[in-house]
Length: 134
Image (cartoon, rainbow, N blue to C red; front, side):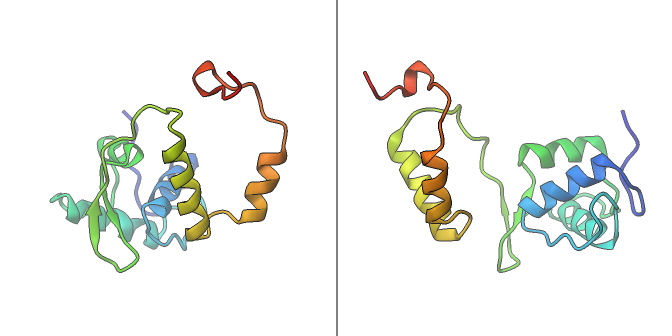
């Protein structure tokens, strides 16, 4: 078991924590890899949401829950939601894939030009379940 992460600590684990917090919607204005006040405040917020004592220190158990996506998430409006259950195993459902691409385009995560450029790149052989040539 490693030491809890807390204010002013540095390192790869702190950088990973910040990336997870950023994906959850928390603004990360601290230097990458430095557990600063913004990182601490995000951890405190998550602890409060889970009914834990808001110490601002992150132990291994809570860190693993955050990495699995089971901790509460902050929405753009500042309200909180609980993360959905883990995603199902990857599949080859074309309808879901198309919906995902439309969502990414609409949210501005990717642009149409980027998608076209990526699609024109040579791609590795597809697994048998995804092979559309048969």
